[in-house]
Image (cartoon, rainbow, N blue to C red):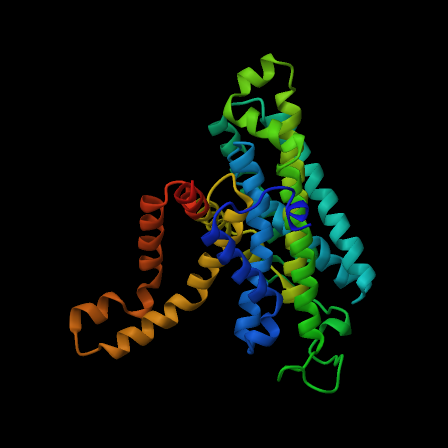
Length: 353
């Protein structure tokens, strides 16, 4: 049953299986295992970014397409939900039709980009997507009458998803089951379903053909496969899933702005997560997103505590000062690429083989 749920793509490594189980169980019971607002925020971001990174890996790892427009699709989904909630009020119907509208617009943008750009060489396609994403970010920032400009949009969500709503009067394992917990489980459930759907896609005949196109597009074209069609379809599917991840972020944050969805920093983070976890492996998105977001969230605090503990040692304490956390995050990334050139998942599977 479990193998069927995973579409036959098992971890194929006991260490990888253990890591994935720990992450799954921790995320599934995060409100009860990790009390506190910061821990729940981190768990929700991990769920959202697992889906976002997995959707990008469908492009980069499975189709061999380098795109810098993924945050544009992410932002379209977030703004679609935000505008729906702002215009028609805080209801679940607004979330549904806003998410559907955002996914549809993202699919149309991806279709246009795919049809007009995928016939060019990889580097030129990457530059086209970068230009389109930059232009879209500028457009969103300037359309303040609709998008709120640089300030973004604040809006209300259904009361059942806010901390004011109490599902049970009594606490469960010391945790009050309020609307925030329900909102988290909405994010977790949708993210899990989207991830399993992507896992099914990459292990289907379509996914196998996509990998063949990635490995040798000339040979795939020669034996009758329509390479542009497969690449365009992968681009559209990836954009739709990224847009749905953006909708989840919009519901969770109750705020949508250019800095949270459209910035180039997020695009770079996504790329790093894919590389760290392992390209061409959906499980790499799980490990890469989890490790990267944990480092983003807690590395600065840990370094600050370590620097204070050894403040008597001048040079070392300065090197690990809290304001140098980005430097050490970069060092960790370089080391991970050096020691895990195929990503963590690739290295674990290779060790098992």
